[in-house]
Length: 468
Image 1 (cartoon, rainbow, N blue to C red):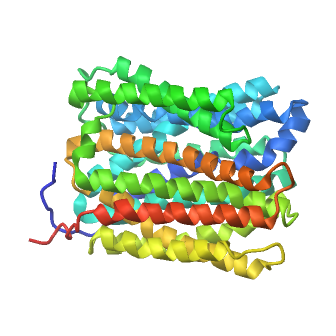
Image 2: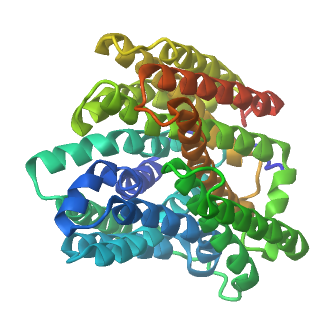
């Protein structure tokens, strides 16, 4: 599976334009995973609906996004990346416009499903285009660029949502996507090269799709129910998780028999580098996703902050990530990604240790400083990991690899949010959450990051692609 070394090269103008197009298209689809999190009460009041129903505005988007990811690899091979990129963005734009026009809560949930289905294919397709165009010698730099929206959007989503709710109608949380993504579509039409290679004979793995997409959706549903406050023994949690595990397990057996004709080729995990990177990212992303769910809740319930203020307090995490992301991308093209990942994890651990010391009387300065430190480490880890993930794979394996990586990230994110919120529930014990409950949960988050060090140590010491 190892790709032949290629000479190092600067980012040429065509590749720079490709990076801009991918970032433009990806940022709003990722932002929409969290932008509505601050609008639950507003939507419940607007549509006279209970919070359990309104929660499906968030859950439905995540489920549809998760279910569409497995289609990405096959769609790229069958129709071409440019065609599918534009189609996915147009689907997202259509869903966004319809969400803004929704006349009741049922319509809004249905349109969020449409929006999420388009969004789910955007990131895998974008990563495939970048990985193919960059090659091993420039992988770190291009992946660091696309990592920016992936890291910033979930953190900034609540802040943007709070600003919109404070000054405009809730409908603008969806309308804002239309002009921005329309620019991304026009840029894609103008900049992206035509799809010269399409495999019209590529057949959709229907049995695989029938196993993997519902399986991933069931896992996300079960874990989201647990993260929403349901008991781990609740029928919705147990049924969702067990059904998801059974379907995904069935898919693995099916994919091993089908080989490279499977929807996602699980044999890629035989590559030590690809397997170790994705195992590390699963655990690490689970922790960071859970953390970004805990922090606003902490600030609002213990500190009494507004949704806008709590989102602002989380923003330093994204700013810290921005400070190191692009630098890390350049370094990962010169040095082993393993070195950078193992350098970033202790920085995150240091910041996590700081979180465990936060109390109800702690001022904003140490809190924001701690989150900034976590962001610095985060910006060192993710670009190096994303670049390393595809470095040892063949050109033809990249569509399936990007799909597999995004499936793992989505599953890890849902698991992490559920796990940390369930742990928080243990410390609350039928009373209002206090600083102690959050502190104990942060200790668990720190332990999860320690666990991510194990697969990182298994990573091979990849040399710079230009080395002899």
